[in-house]
Image (cartoon, rainbow, N blue to C red):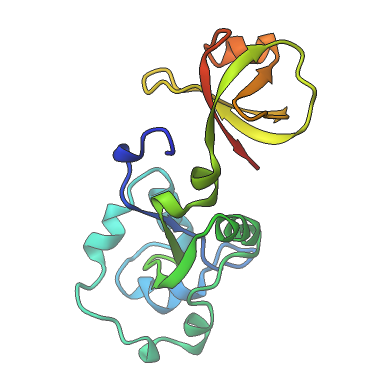
Length: 188
């Protein structure tokens, strides 16, 4: 995203998984979606999971939904994430994503967003020249080549310097790089 910002929208949106119980029951789906669909939440989640989210939007009402008309249980989970999704939300928040009050019509999970160029790892990423050799170790970084067609990215422990970074020969090869190539690095 840092290397090819023109290929992305100015705002990046992430829909976070809403609350469901250990049996796959979503209070928000039961309070809203159930009235518009004749399928269970599990089945709807599967259909969305294979990439067909449009069917939800097509069948939901086109007019505002008055949340006070939803059950108390459905209202209570609006904008909340599934416990297993909380770490992902925390990571995105550290990157600069914020909840702007929108929720997913499917499961009531929060939708978080950030301006593309304000995302921390994009903003802090930098271009460095590769030196091939035994790296001194360091801290975790994402390191990528700069190619659009053959984009490759890896996680490596690096110690970047002002204008360069030492990469192990196998990592240099895996990223389709050569001595003196430029890479983009972003600290984790």
